[in-house]
Amino acid sequence: MAEAAHIPVMYNEMLEYMSPADGEVYVDGTFGAGGYTKGLLNAADCSVYAIDRDPNVQKLAEDLKQKYPGRVELLVGNFADMDELLKNAGVEGVNGVVLDIGVSSMQIDNAGRGFSFQKDGPLDMRMSCEGLDAATVVNQTEENELADIIYKYGGERKSRRVARAIVQARKESAITTTKQLADIVRSVVRAAKDKIDPATRTFQALRIWVNDELGQLTRALDAAENILLPGGRLVIVSFHSLEDSIVKSFINDRIGKMAGISRHMPLPADYGQVKPTFKALTKRAISASEGEIKINIRSRSAKLRAAIKLEEATS
Image (cartoon, rainbow, N blue to C red; front, side, top):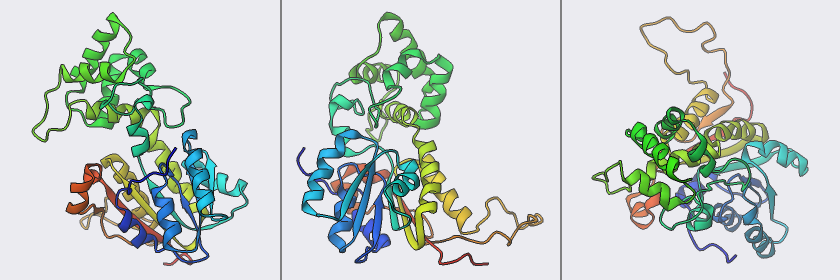
């Protein structure tokens, strides 16, 4: 595998908020093609623990170990378990954690992984290459549950129609390829004015469901809090409104901002008693620049949020 040439989404913004420093230790919880890891290593004389559940990244990680001897280590596993993975590697605390949520360009570009309908391939979508694949979900899930998955995780308003079409098609023959599924969706969903392929939302929903991406993100944020040292920085780039909502809620909770409080209602009994453990570095989600979106269309939905762990709990 050749060294990835791509520049990851919101690369400069990630470095700005992470502020890499010599001698510090960072975690790239979603290694992928290694773009963020290389950025951190180039920005300072630091070290990086790269985490990925995709076993196919090991060759790329070995290449980076050769280029940056003694400064990068790959931990194969789920980023939701980063605190345990790091402790097993003898690391008790780190100075920063960066997460780029979602599928990597390396996975999308490999038709054999089944993440994209741009090229025909097996309907897989598993980031870890283990467990339930998308073909099993499509062929065995009951119609109502399938429609709920497509609506909740893909935002597809025609989810009932899509699920019905899938169930009808699989009665004739099993749906095993990305082209089969994409054609079924296109047969019942018209192309929108934004020219996004009608199959996009259904594929996104299945990918999120197959990989439990929202559940893993929730666990990963807790794990990052456990492993970050005081003064450590957390930077997250997400691509889906549900992902961003989870990140926003986590940060708001940790900075002591209570959601849903009305000035017309009495304050909760514990208001002001919960001591913040983080300080937000971004007042709101940061979006990719127009220039970046023109170069990399994937960045159009990207949102970046960042926070710093407090030296000690403050009131």
